[in-house]
Length: 320
Image (spheres, rainbow, N blue to C red):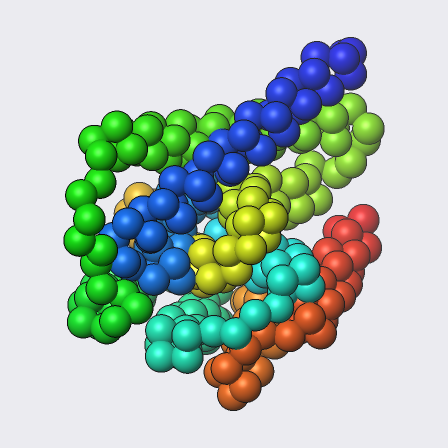
C-alpha cells in the first residue's frame, strides 16, 4: 500500500484541526467576554464538552463492536494524555495564576473521581452500580459549574456586560464556534485514521497504536485548543478545558461503555495496576501545588511531560 494518500490526508487533517482550533478558541473567548462568564468556566464546560466528543464517540463505538480493551484504553489513555502531554505543554509554555475558589473545587473533584475509579476497577471490572456512582459525580461537576456561573454573575468581574451585542456578531461567532467544533472533530478523525495507517505500514504493533495513537489522537481537540489558547494568552481557558475534559472522560466514558455492554465492563489488570495510578500521579503533580500556591509553575509542566514520556516509553517496551 502506498504512503502517498495517507500522508496527504494526514496533512489535510492537520490543516483542518488547526483552523478549527483557532476559530473555536476565538469564539469561546468572545462568549466569555460578552457574557461575563469566567474563561475557566467556559473552558471547563462548553469547550471541554465539545473537545471530549472524540473520546466518548470512539469508546462507545469500540464497546458496541466488541473492542472493550480499546474502549477502556482510550478512556484512561486520553486522560493521561490530557494531563501529562497537553497540560504539560500548557504549563511549560504559559504558567499562570489561578482562581483559587473555582479551581480548588474542580481540581479536587478530578482527583476524587480518578481515585474512586481506581478503587472500583481493582477487581478487574466496572459494574453497573459503580457506573451510576460515576455518573452522579458527573452531575456534581455540572452543578459546580452552574454554581460558578451564579457566583460570577454576582461579582464585579463576572457581571454580565449590559451593552447590546449586534446580531451580526452573535451569528459570526456562533458560526465560528460550530465550524471550529466541526473542524476539530473531522481533523482529529483524519489524523487518527491516517496516522494509524502510516504506523501499520511502518510495522508498529497494533496494541501500541491503540494505546498511543488512538488515545493521543482523540485528545487532539484538547491539544489544538490548548495550543491556540497559549498563542492567544488564554491560559484559564486552556486549563479549564483540560480539567473539565478529564472529569467528563473519567465519569462518562467508562460508565457509558458499561451500560452499553449490558453487564460489568472488564478492565485489564494493567489498567488497574499501572495506567490509573500513573494518571493519578500526573494529576497530583498538576493540582496540589496549584491549590497550595494558587498558581501554576513551569516546573510542573516539565515534570508532567517527563513522567508522561517515561510512561509511554515503559509501555512501549512492555508491549514488545
